Length: 212
Image (cartoon, rainbow, N blue to C red; front, side):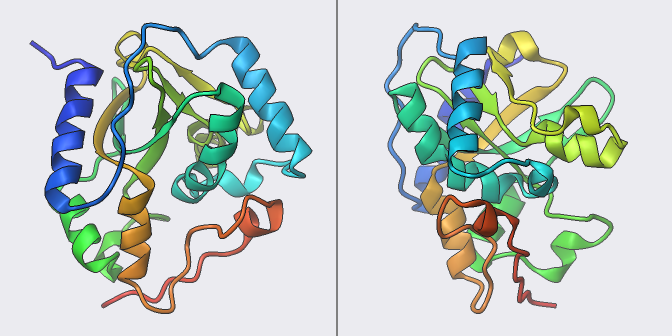
């Protein structure tokens, strides 16, 4: 029997704790959070911050999801957990890091081999809500660029992950801001996270000094 998203999330909790990364487990609720109204309110709040284009989000899901999470929490009125892992659809894997990848990155940061044959890192990030729903503000912007489908740019997707699957399937593996901030700290002179939630910071080219 296939594990549910919540079961996989608890495995991600255990793995994150094993790594020593800090995070707070989500309170559980049966309240449905992801609605069309939520997406509209979030997009309005993002626009009010001067972030008027998601073109820079293509291939930068980690940076954008990390930077926008506090704003999304404010709109939602509840905690949101930054979540990392695999995204797979019925025919292919968009992102499929292994447990070993996640552990190595947490211990040493990214290396040159992590980018071989790819335009970016093999890792996706999204938000998990207290209800167990997911919310993703960057996936379709990335696919918009890859598929040359400009109408997908800036689309916010989400809902109950077990109902969304297999188009796509979200597989949570590690959670929390501290995980990715630790990855960056292991890479002196590198900067791939935004320091503030502004369009200039989000669109700034990442600086990656990586081991060969």
